[in-house]
Image (cartoon, rainbow, N blue to C red; front, top):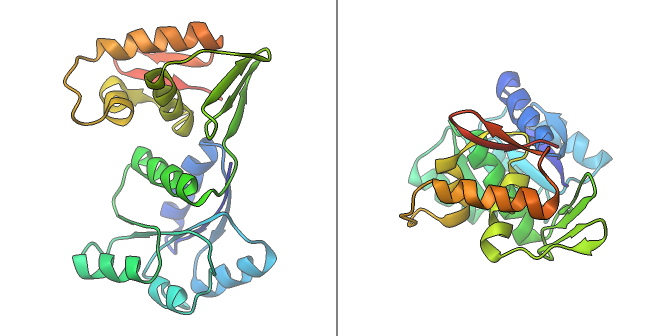
Length: 217
């Protein structure tokens, strides 16, 4: 997965973001102001930067104007939710702009989308005897390719990108089927059963009572 630099001056928010990213398999470094972010960049280049706007020792917009992060993808995380601020952030070269407060599911989805778009990080996962490559859309069980439908793979991708997080059936429908899907949530149960069987993931895909499912890695 990706190495992500989280630049956020509120420690509680920074720690919460890092906790969710680590649960999803990413490695993280934390900076709490602009100066510290630049120092960390000199030590190691990240695959992605999550950047607050209102920072001490150099705000996020100024850091982008100075091209501190070079060509690294950047997602703004900020309470500044005005259209003018969003447009400014995107025009400065940010790949996305997320306003606070946000849910962990949204953050991980946006992070995953930017990493896919920019080709950053690695998207190969080993779960027991199952190897999954999201970029190639392949799944191998004991070295043999498992035949998944497009919908099964899309559901698997959602579970992987939100691994270790409990997702409701409604969230899984929205993320894997799309907001315009009008079927009922039982179709999620059917597809989960097929994924468990085809990929030998009976122990990894947990049922969350009266809620949904969680992929535990």
